Amino acid sequence: MNLFAKLGTTGLIALSAVSVMAPSVSAAGLSSKVETVRYEHHGRDICSPLMAVRKARASGIRRAEIAKITPRRVVVVGRSHHGMERMVFANQSDCPVMRR
Image (cartoon, rainbow, N blue to C red; front, side, top):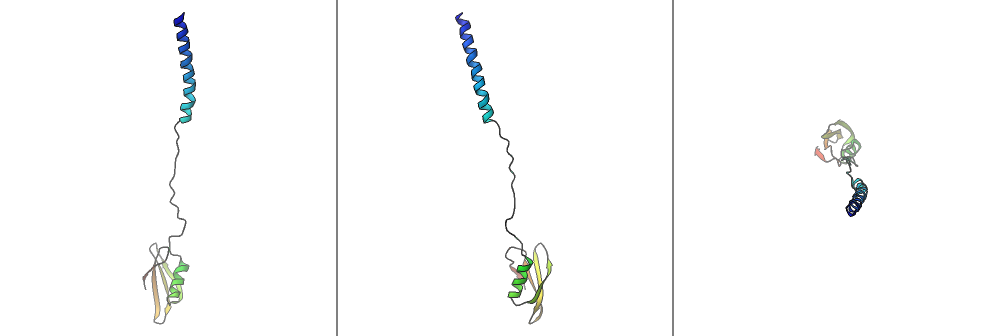
């Protein structure tokens, strides 16, 4: 009879261990989290046409207007004391002058 009591006690301990282990395994569980990387630009990284015209006017070109915009450059044409002038700006955020 002593053998059956030990087996019963061992069985109860095993069942209680399984019931305790199941919630801890499910709580630790695998998390499937998908993260996406965003490449958003908060500021403008291109030369705005208005800024290019303002810079051309500040450097002495009158009646400045945009002639051409490409992915690499912004071309502004207008008049100066010497006749028709053309300024080329890089299409970057601060409109650096490439050629005059």
